Image (cartoon, rainbow, N blue to C red):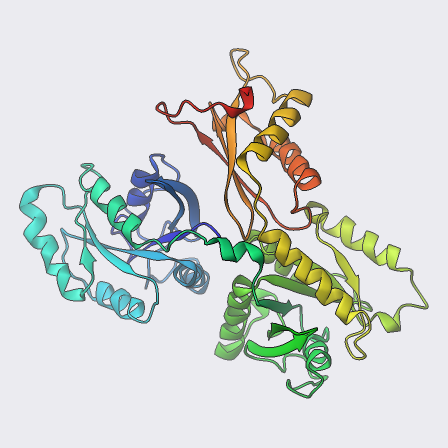
Length: 448
């Protein structure tokens, strides 16, 4: 199970970024009186009691962006809402209920995650009756003031009470079903491959690019195990998307990536890697999804090019994804399809793997002794006290240290390579967080 996400949503200028900064204790999000400053999501880890969550700041709902990025902003908000385990619906006590608040509330009523209504700018007790006006939306209410530091503990306690339970042991044994999302640009053979898997014309297959306009779940069995294959619309460059059908088709395809246990990223053996392919691979990587690069229609190339050349081409193009396995298949005949599915199952098991704290810290200790982190200003060396795996899917490691900023990107890549080489998740994404150890925390397992 991954780290729970808590999304802060609301209309523009209610103080979402201020509350985000206030809760995490750092000034990361830009705060400005001009509406619409926040466009992309900002995500940061936050410890609440004994749980680690990801706090997500979003743009203002309903704003018309001056740079014509409204669709992009709304897309990012939708991603945050769809992924959230708890939603903080932020409103403004001083201005009262605005029409856009009604719009946001209506949008949240169809969401499955629990919602907390949080009237911000309740700077004094005298304003609490005004905050109570928002109770008519029907959700639990926690009045706060980021500016005056009021209500932070109450809000964190409420979030904590609504978090999903931690992962149970049975999740580690593997799931009965694995969701495979098949993505790629248009006309690379995704639907043909699914038809071959299910041995029927379950999907419409056409040589006309863009036939699949929605994401479709197809259940099938292999060796007594049940799987779900998710066929998706062919991706296009954002500026090439025209009309609501293609726009929402792309959104649904992206949502299908987020639903996946493993993503099969399809390439056409007879075509060069395109900008769309690169955008798709970036999207998969940004969501830490196990992935296999699938070179389809290989029967057309097998007599003209060795597999090593195409593999080198992929490795050279996606230099930060050297861990991603590569498969060569012919979707129309099913050649190498079973081997591909077996490898996907192995990746899914890797993403569910857990490592004991003792084994993890022995590995980190040896890695740091072999290659210590660089000295900081003042000739002090950053120190890791201990590390712990806090989640699976993706495997997530938190390093508790004296100074999180003392570990530059190249050193983090070194530690990541050690984790990949020595732990049972060498082919799947790994998330790493560096957190400052609390003064009350005296653990120092790397000394032992």
